[in-house]
Length: 258
Figure 1 (cartoon, rainbow, N blue to C red):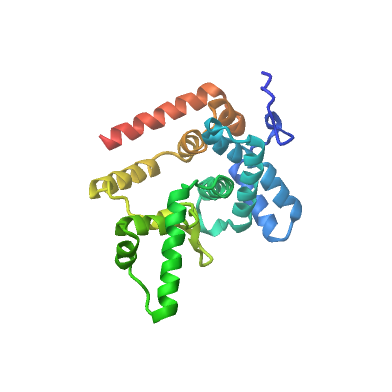
Figure 2: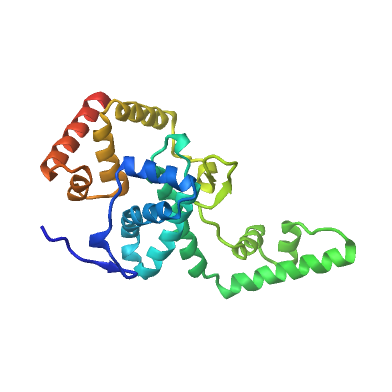
């Protein structure tokens, strides 16, 4: 069956090779031995990861060629920092890094627009605070500034916050040679409950009860976003077999989670 040819940044997506786990492990071992060719093969063999993430940004009207190149930077960073000893799937590790790279690019090139009136107020606040500090050596509180400018303390705080640079939720804030901690990891989800946590644990236990191939298929289908045909080609089985394994895995999860 002929595959539909789509070119992005000069890359024919129909010809992108998808590496098997065994191939990935071997190439990472070779890369540790300073094999530059192995690194190139890992990059080329994981471009589908970048393409799957780009689907999330199609409706934004962004230049997909640019986003693809930026995503590839995130992919390269993930490859260079991946550690096989942690026994984490490369896709699980790489997806947040690729997403973070793309979102940082979008943030830096699409700055939030702040109204002129808010900016003017912020500059008045800063100037007043500087003048008072120069005169008295004391820092004015937002309440004092608000009273002097005939505005509310909230307006003062809001104006000052508007001048701050936005930060991506996927901004790395800590890395001690292990897994990177991102800003979003430190933000509490007010809607989350103990019940949600218990459900997540139950789901993880249920997934661990699946066979390796079933886990792999669900991961590729619903995390990476590959088609059944792509997975079939990767595993050297038919699309019908992939469909059956996927269906059986989902039914198994339903029974356990009832």
